[in-house]
Amino acid sequence: MSGTGGQNENEDLSATYRFKVRFRLEPQTDVQLDPQSFETLLSKPASPPGEKDWLFFRDNLWRGEVNDEPHMRSRMETTLGVPIEKIRFRELRTTSSYLDTLKEAITEELDTPPTVFGNATNADNVLKKYLGSSIHVCSPN
Figure 1 (cartoon, one colour):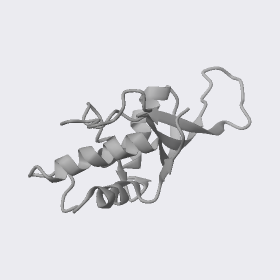
Figure 2 (cartoon, one colour):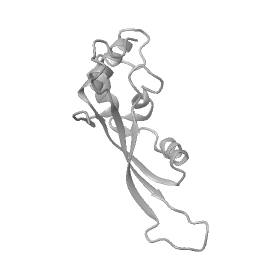
Figure 3 (cartoon, rainbow, N blue to C red):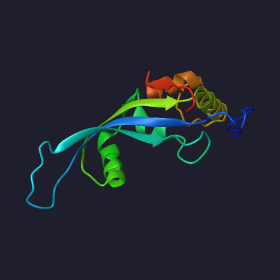
Figure 4 (cartoon, rainbow, N blue to C red):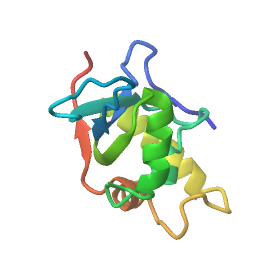
């Protein structure tokens, strides 16, 4: 897979999956917490297209929602070390360079049967299928 195609090495090819996470603290002593649950924004860097875990969106999201919340809660409990009560996908925050590169990689997959995206016909269709309208293109930081 060509990955970045003709992209300039200096262009920012970054993207981040963002989730709202509600977690609970469970003290191991006789202290009490009020509140005991908290909500925060979790950001997970997106792998560059074509690299390991670049299909995170396909494997974990559907129509802009977490497709298997118990699995994702368990995964984030392991990552964060606290019980997760709820997790909701918010957005893929990306640069336009990363999004272009992602679309190129998706198109390459669509052109090589068997496709990993079912019956999708183009990259925009794939992104809508898995991310819904939850793509936020930002300027590089």
